[in-house]
Length: 253
Figure 1 (cartoon, rainbow, N blue to C red):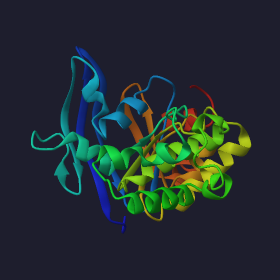
Figure 2: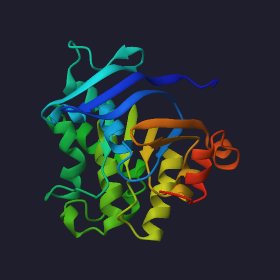
Figure 3: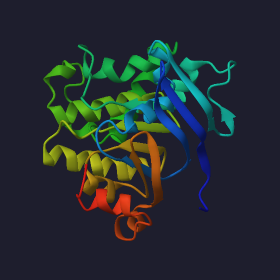
Figure 4: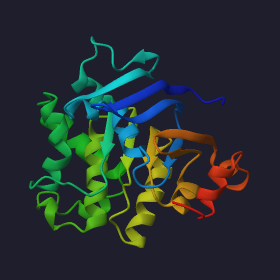
């Protein structure tokens, strides 16, 4: 790859107490690229995604072996400030989770938590983030209304705007369109195409058509292992392994 390497996972193992959920995974992520993680339910995709910004730290008796490098620095080093790490690696969850606040305050939330008090800066960043999330034109006349009044698709784009407001470098998306209708899903996919110009994006999806549409690189997971990874068009048309071919042609999963 000629793109800049942004994150690199090296021989990652992850345990829930004694259960080994991820085994010996090595995978690179590049700036300006979308990487899709595919595989059947329970294969470790979301667990792996949460390792990338240390969300699994919150799970009792969980532990990590191996290294995850962000700009060549190990994110599991004891000197790493986890709050700072999560401002560099934003996350969008499966179901839209707006706060019961105004649209404006939802987007401003992360800025305020990070100690930003400049009202002009906050207002500018809210507008910029809503624009980046392709939502500004739909909400600009009601940004002081409750975010809970938005449609499901708009709420998910609001959550993306909230993640963008703190200017992350990497965006993790855990099935961001699985709860949305086809039209809202298409808007999210179009948005991903726009955002990859500015961010490194890693998306978990059950929908292989979606992976084919939005990603540059696809990684196939099965039972806690990374089976195969390649450029998306290559993986879907000329997979190297029969196991990958069986999954993407619907023979199992």
